[in-house]
Structures are given as structure tokens and as C-alpha cells.
Image 1 (tube, rainbow, N blue to C red):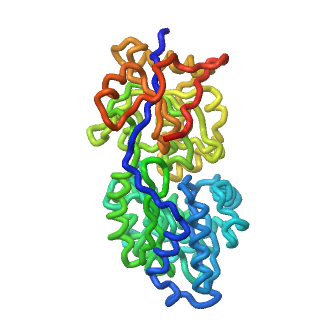
Image 2: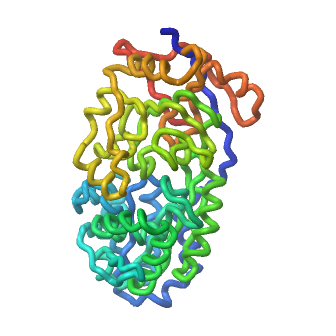
Image 3: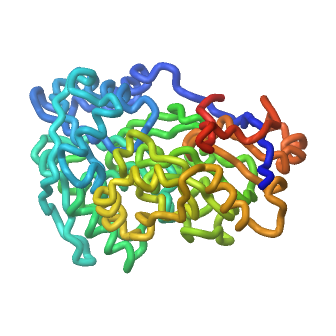
Length: 422
């Protein structure tokens, strides 16, 4: 088979960023006058999630430093639903892998899967809350605000979801995801958040928005009474700031790696156009991708291949790297069992691409619209097939920096990775 020739293209995104993270965290938190609410020696639980958020270790350390400055004792609590295999040890390992360690932050990490039921919503849903956090005097909810990979609403993934799923741990996440199948996401998330804000001594939130290059764009300390209003606004900002594929129509998308540190769905459905249907774009999606080939899992995902089932193709080495138990726990807890599926796979990338290109439509393989990306978080530089270059030439936001060249297969028939850069 004749394969498409590829070119390396740089995407140009408008991407303001914060240069001095500690100073911004201190400025934002100081504006809330938390010293008026925190008494000397009180314990403050600070949430640390499972996402690969830029500068997350430094952000959490800076929160801990501010807590100490007002007399509080910071306690870091892993808050990530069922991730890490649904175990305290697994969840601690995830945040430590991001650099959120006791040595770096100067704060104790207390990991537990125990919850307390603090309330019941009007729907009859028990409200679970991390026991360690509940036993602290106050809680600071830290999380990234961005579009959810499945649900749509005025708030999606952010501070509310951290209170719902992160601090609900495995027990709460299972119940809430079941409830969301019968009630709207917005209805459930608001009902649970209302209970948490009323019952659980939430001191403040620290909301993070990233730019299109996976850099910290915005950090905002939010008072509990303003969570809903500010998260609505920050979600709009996040949507505007997100990266995107260079084209709205792609016949074969090759993704070097997926993982929980990249997205809750392994690969961000907002980027690949699979938010409403696992294997086809709908009229609600802005991007139409016909076939997806996932080449690998990130090291930080620890075998959790949740989302792999949305791809049509993978290679044998990726299929063998899946921790089936961890993946099943996460996918079932999220109410998305198909996400744990293993796609059609072959031993080498060359074999995968040969078979994938035969299914993309009425086009000769060498003329197919193919895009290869590192992952759905890093899209500053991508590889695009020669068939896309006429469109590249007509746009100011795209620049060819190398190629076109033959697909870079090694002696085993496997592709070289795109790499991350901008």
C-alpha cells in the first residue's frame, strides 16, 4: 500500500499564560482574607486530582504556603473518584507522580477511600464526602475548569465536579454516575454541590484554566458563595482557550498516547468529536473524525486505558499494556462500559494503518486526510498528510515547519512519535 506523505505543522494559538505561579496563587488567596475564618492550628484539606494539570505541584504547594501563612495546617487529600484502581495507595501514587509529594509541598498527604454520608438530595441520593476532608476544619477545592468529555451544561468539569466525584471518592462516584443516567448532569451536580457547600466547611476554591499549549492561563481563588457564577464564566474562558485539531474533517487520526493524566476519557472527546457518540461525529460535534488509531498509553495512566474503546484501531503492544481491572473499575464507575473496550489491533503500526486506511472512504490511501498528534492535550505541533497541505497554505494560523516526508516507520514497522513542542 502507498501511504500518505506527512508534514510537520505548527499551530498558532492565542495563549496568554501566568509566569509567576506562587505570586498569582498568593495574590488570589490573599484577596479572600482567609485569615478571618481560619484559626491558628486548624487543619485545611486541599484536593489533589488525577489530571495532568500544568504546574499542579507548584500550585498546590503555593496553596499550602498560604494556608500556613494564615495559621492553618495544610493536609493534601487525593480526590479522584475511582482512579488509581479505587485504592488509597493507588491514588496517592498518582499525585506523587505529578510531584505532589510531602517533601515538595511541606504538607502531609492523607489518602483514604472512606467517605461519610453528609446529606441526601431531594432525589434521594446520598451525598458522600471524603472522610479525611470532612474531619478537617476546612476544605479548599482545587481543580481545573474545562469542558466535560461527556456531559453538557453551564458547568461541566471543575470545582463542582471535584466536590461531586473527587471528594465523593469511589462510593460517591458510582452513585452519582448512576443517577446522571436518569437525571440531568446539571441537576445532580448542583444538588450535590449545594449539600457539600452547606455541610462540609468549604473554605474556598482555587480554579485553574489552561491555555492551548497546556500552560497555566488563569488561577482564580473563589469564595464558596460564588462557585456557580464564577465556574460558568471560567468554563466559557476555557472553551475559548482550548487547543483543537488543525482541521474540522479528518479521515484517520493517529494518537500517540492516551491516559487519565491527559483527559478523563483518555483522549478528550471535545477535541476528537466523540462527545455524544463513541464512534461517529454528530451534528453537535464541531470536528468529524472517521477513524482513530491509538498507539499507546501514557506512563502516568498506570495501565488505565479508559477511553481506548472509543478508538477503532490500536496496536498489540497497547492492548497488552492495558490493566483490565483498573480500566474496568473506572469505566464502570463512570457509567461508560464501552470505554473499556479493546479495538481491532495488529502487531505493528504499519499493519494498523494499512487496515485503517482501507476503511476511511472512497479515497486512495496516499490521498487520505491523516493527522497524527502526541495526545489531545498537546496540539502545538502535529503531523498532517499531503492531502491537507493546500488548506494549510491558505491559513495564517498554520505553518509547515518540515516535510512532506514518508511516514517514519522504524525497522519493526512502528511510527515515530510526534513529540511535544511549539
